[in-house]
Image 1 (cartoon, rainbow, N blue to C red):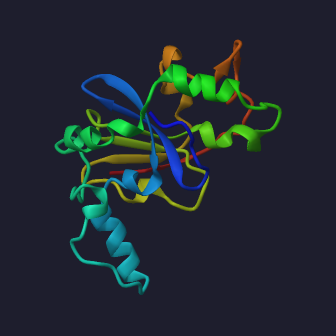
Image 2 (cartoon, one colour):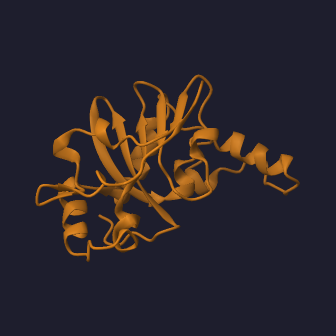
Length: 172
């Protein structure tokens, strides 16, 4: 289980597979679901990209409902429990957003519904690189997480309830 999460390198992801929500703290590039689209975007902007080399992501170029179980199987070390994330937050100074923002969820990936919801605050737009036939939204998704899995509720206070939240939807 991951003991540290680095802002800018890692993201916290709620992944739903077989009706079960699990939290992962992983390097953000792993969660670009369609790396072929991402590579094409790099090529279109004039960068050189290794063609068909997805070894840095377990040789899975597209993570979708058909490859999710295999992909998540490789991420066992990145699996974190709600209780662990809650305890990590509890041990921080919660008086300023910058003290704990790195522990807030960035993505909700529902493999059954074929949907990605992103609220990642940095320039990487996960919602642009989803598998064909998937929906993608850049918007807060925190209210759709079951209450028992909301590790950011500390002593009855929802740390995310006071944020100005907005978003945009990208059609499949």
